[in-house]
Length: 170
Image 1 (cartoon, rainbow, N blue to C red):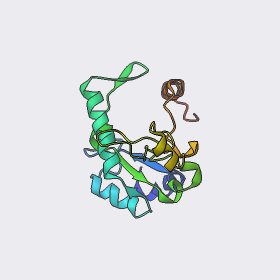
Image 2 (tube, one colour):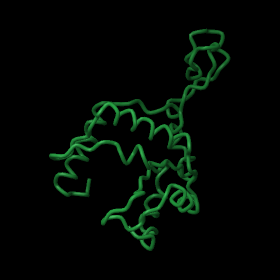
Image 3 (tube, rainbow, N blue to C red):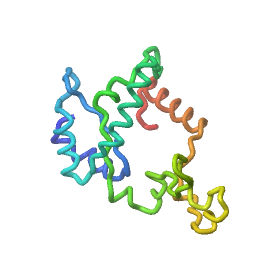
Image 4 (cartoon, one colour):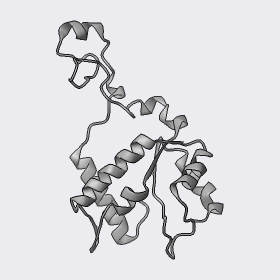
């Protein structure tokens, strides 16, 4: 999509807390804007998004592992690898949305120290009663959302259905 139409989708993007973006580095008949990471990063940062190098590297790394394991996502009669994700996925944070109370679960990880060499735990969940008494329990809305297989499968089916039928309304 040409940059003259970016304002149309940036309006929707600005409602997102996290933005995962891929792009083309090598063109093709269906790419009107072919730029490197720096161009896209500058463009999105000029609209208030913050580039996350750590999350970008994490997503690209996971895609690389999955591609190496030959994991494929079947859509119709075609299997897609994570090539574009591994090569050009960029992750941005929208601080105006990510900072809202309903997104307190974003970037959630246990923060109370247990012992050297041990992973942190959510405050109030320490096995050591003395430590638990010193720390305030963290409310559920501040914890990460647990992975639910049924939600993942439902999302996967929705993507397959929309691609197979051409229905973009999902």
